[in-house]
Structures are given as structure tokens and as C-alpha cells.
Length: 637
Image (tube, rainbow, N blue to C red; front, top):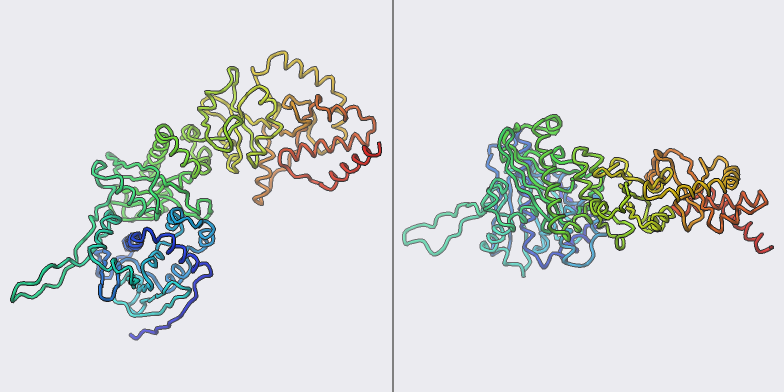
């Protein structure tokens, strides 16, 4: 059958050329990683074929032995990496290679700093590993055919990485992908067989798919004998790393394996390697990355560890093996007991999967607890990258709520700067002798929380308060009501009850003050009308004239703002206005005889309290008019 070449010259996406230049420049000091990336991609392609062939073994096309072959040509200065994996169709080539990392491209460019060391760690996170080929090549040719399609459906892609590429339909007998790198003149070392073998040994020895090269031939054949054609030989160990004994594996091997499965350029923070035997037999190798992926908050982002059954790759992101709040964990689970044709649907209702998932969670939490105990600096790095994700845990994982809470770190009124470094255990150790609760405040910024009028009485009594400023914190405190028997209490909800921190004299004094200023409360209540739920004398304030609080079981003002910013409806709740009668402004308002001026002052008091906690005024123009009117009256007086 003849092939319609249908050759096209296409322009890269606008940002792609920039990305190519950045990749080449940032990784130039560590050139040899290009081979690791291409071998890793080839390994993924082989494993995807093995998975798809579980339901359609015709995809093997009478060649079930999966492999990666690397060949060099010193004279032509080329290096070719070939696999007989799943391959790609013309459309897949266009979508995968013509548009780097799709929506991630712009984020990638924004994340690049110009610092080579930092930027080299970003490459793998953005799915641009293929383009590392251009570090050593001035032209890259890719020929591929998807398994199961006819030989006439081969695709040839070629580019010099300078703004455009060509793509055409060609004949390709075997399935899979061949990538040929036309090496730059000063990169001829990568056309040397010994150099390639050393790189494979260093970076890709653990790849479970055989990596083959033609055997080396030395010297001349003896007289009368013909030189035998060299045969392909495996140059990597090809043994699944997770199946080997922990005592045999070096730290460097664990790190390289993580970089392979995580497509990362940085060593992991920690790992856990386990073999479980008994009713449910499996091996697991789990890693905590050093850096959060750019798409960690993407709603479409997939997560989970790789699932194998008896060393056969089943699926890339088995999310049922790891909860969403641990979606940053990378790794492998290899089960001896699951069926080879297990699907995502079957995983949802499988007791063995539930058992593996539960054990995975305990291992990861144990790993983090050990890190927090033994290496505070490393744990601080973990918390900075993944703390906001871990805070989703108490809502999602009731069984491990207390353990997750124990790992959390917070900024407080007694911590230095904005660093989230105080654990709940440390908070409890520092509690006042008669303190019964863990106090917290939620706000949309550290400054707003730290300077909130709600904290005034706590400063006076030297009581530490947690400052919660991440969006997820509202979700957290709605599901974490206590820790080690200590109730978590918002300082901005309900009537403030300090328990035994308040002596009988303080309580009696508050009742006396409330009685003395009963007329003031009634006048403000009448002036504000439907704008407030209640007006009362405050025991929170020592310096500010007023503050807003909500009922014990009502949504906080901060959560209402967060929901509105996200475009969601939030129930309208009227605030409670608490006033401080000892403040000079409140004392002046109390003495105001003119009811219209009194109403203006009461409204300004309410608006000030709203602004002080980061809220927005319903009618800013009315606030300005009242303020102007009062200023004019003062100047006239």
C-alpha cells in the first residue's frame, strides 16, 4: 500500500521556543540527563503497551518481548533510542510534541528564575523531558507508529528546535518510537558506546524494561575467520528495584529511581520501602518529593502511585492507593494477589486495595513523624511545600485525624515572623496553667490576623493564639474540633468564655460595666437596626472601640469572604457588634445628645469594625458621606 506523505511544516506554540531555549541553557551543566529522560519516556511507552495488551494482545503484533535499544553512529554523529512500546498516532505526536506541557507551559515560564541550579529542577515537573534532547542535538528526528495500526500509519517528526517542525506520514514496519539525535559537533562524546553505557548504568540501571546495546567487539578476527555480526546485549540490571532487598540498595539508587518515576531532577526528601507477606502480599516503595509540582492545585490534576501486579505495570496513577491529601506522594505498589485485568472501577470495591491504602497512609505518616522528630530542618522544608495539602487530611481521613493534626505547623502570636513552625503539641505545652482551650483566629493575611482587635484580651493575659491564614484553614477547623482532649476555639465566635483564666472579680466587673452602659447598647441597637444581630459590651477589647463576632455555630466572616471570592454563595449572617465602653471614642458617642449625629457615629463604629477584620462595606459611599459630615461639624464647631 502506498503512503500519502502529507508533509506539513508547523510552528511551535508561541512559548515553546522560549521553553526550548531555557531548557537547553538551564540544563547545559548536567547534559547527560537527556538520556535518562528519553529512556524513561521509552520505558513508560513499553509499560503502557503491556497494560493495553491485557485486553487486546493483538497489540503485540507477534513481538511480545518489550525492550529499549540504543545505537550510536560515530561517523554520522548520531544517537538513536528505540522502543517497541505503544507508539503514537499523528494526532498524538502533534498534541504531545507540538504543544509542550499544554496549560503548564506558561506557568513553567513564570517559574523559571534564570538560576541554572533552580531551573534544572523545574524541567521534569513540567513534562518537557523530551526537549532535553536539544541540549546535545542540533536536530531531532522522531519516527513512530501506534501499536495496532498498519505500517502505512507511521509518523515522522523532525525539528532543529528553533521555532518550527515538520510532520509527515511514513511507512514504519515495527510499532513503537525511534528518536534519533543529530549531535552537535562538540557533543561527539555521546556517539561513543562506552559513554552511553556508563550513563545508562548511572541513571537507568533500575528500569524494569531491558535496555540493550550492540555488544562491543575488540581486536581483529583470527585469520580465516569472519567477524560475527554483533548481537544485542542488555546493559541495565532490569530488576525491579522495589523487589530487591533494602540492604542491597544504595541511597543513590533510591534517588535515581525516584527521579525516573517522578520525572524530577531533585532528590526526594525521604522514602519508605516495605515488603508485606501473609494474606495480602505486596511490595511498596513510596517517596516524599522535595518540591511541590506546579499542578498540585489543578482540579484536573491526577495523583496516585504506580500500580503493578506481579511486576506487570497496570496503571500510572492509581488514586485509590493514596488519599487526595497525600497526592504529592510518588512511588510504586506491586501486588501479588490482584488480578492482571484489574481496572479503576474494580479498585473502588476491593478489600485488598483498602488494606494497601490504609497501610500506605500509615507508612507515609510514620515517615513524616520520624522526619519531624529527627530532622526539623528537613520537615520545615516539607511543611513549606506540602503543609496546605496535608491540612485537607482531617476532613478526608477521620481515622488518622489526630496523627495528621500532630504533624501540622502554625504561626502564632508568639512565633517569629510568618513562619508556620509551632505544632499543636508545642502549643499545649506552653498553655497557661488554667487554660482549657486551643485558641485560634482565621483571616485572609498574616497581618490581618496578627493585628485583629479580637486578640487584645489574649495579649493582655499572655495567652497564645494560632494565626490561621491559609484558605484551607477554614475547612480544617470545621473538621478538627479538638486535639488531645483540648477543644479548638475561635476567638471571633460566640461570647468569649476564658474559663478559669477569668477570675470571679473580672466576671463581676464585666456584668457591672454591662449594666452601667445598658442605655448605650440600646441606643446603638436602635440606630443600627437590621444591620446587626445584637449589640453588647465586649470583654475581648482593651484598645479598640469595637469588633464584630458571629454566633458559635455560624459561618465565620472570613469563610464567607473566601466563598464569595470563589464565586460560591455564602449564607448571609448578621454580625454581633461588641463595643468597648472604656475607649474614648465610645465614651464620646455615649455622650452625644443629637440622635442623628449619634446614628452616624454608631454606623461609623460598625463600618470601622468591618474594615478592621478585612471585610468590605456594603455601602462605602454612605460611610464616606457620614465621615465627611462629621468632619465638617467638627471644623464648624
